[in-house]
Each structure stands twice: as structure tokens, then as C-alpha cells.
Length: 159
Image 1 (cartoon, rainbow, N blue to C red):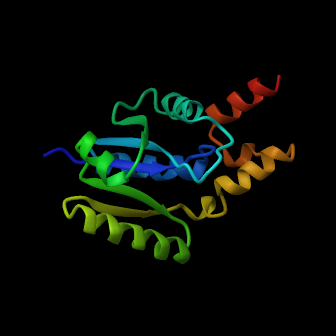
Image 2: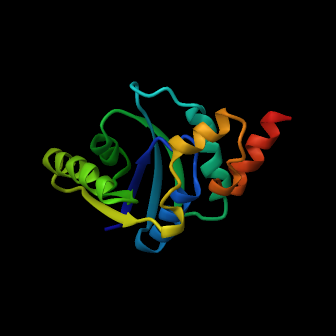
């Protein structure tokens, strides 16, 4: 059986913290779907298509990573792509408490899907999409927090 995983999130925008988790998960799985979830309670700064393009560019040479857009329950989408693992990144203890609650609910909904937590590298602990969005909105330099493909895209959109 293949080890297929879904890494769900908003990724608005894609940060070095997200890329760190994916890069360290590549040896663990046969396939990683980066699932850009559509959340009706959030108003994203960047379109889902733009976020998917960033992942496609970042992982253009990595066949194990594919970005997708999905709607609805994460466990239901896992069934669609035959994923038996959900990948989540953890920065702080508070992240773990929140993520464990979701993992427990997902396990109740489908006992065949296991959630795997990876802790972020300490140098990326302070990298949060919310902070990065605030920096971008206020004209600051968010480049220290973003992958090169995202930086280039943002620079091109400002020109």
C-alpha cells in the first residue's frame, strides 16, 4: 500500500515554514498532496489558484509533491485521493492542542486516516501567514519569510 498524505491548509501565502514541513515529509511518503482548502469563513489575500501555482513552481522538480484545491471535510477529500495520512506542522504547544482536537475528530470520522505531526525548524517558528500578510499589506519586506517563487511572484505583481 502506498503512503499517500494530504497536507491541508490555507497557505495564504506559502511560507518557508510550510516548505520546511513538506521538504522534511518527502522521505516519509510516496505522495504528498498539498491541499489548499477553501474555507468560507476566511477571506484569503491570494486566490487558491495563485497559491497552487506557487507550490507547483516550488516543487516542479519533485514528482512526489502535487498541489490541489479542495472544498469540504478534509477526511472526505483524503478518501478522494486515497490518502491514509494527514500531515500537520506544529510550531508551539498551543498548535499541538488545537491540532490534536482536529486529529481526534478526523479519527472519529475515519479510523483509517492517521494524522502525522512534524515540528517546524526553530528558525521558522515565528513564520506565520497572518504575520506575513500584515507585512505585505503594510508595504514591508516579507521576503525573509517567503520561498523565492513567492517573492518573485509578488515582485512581478507590484511592477
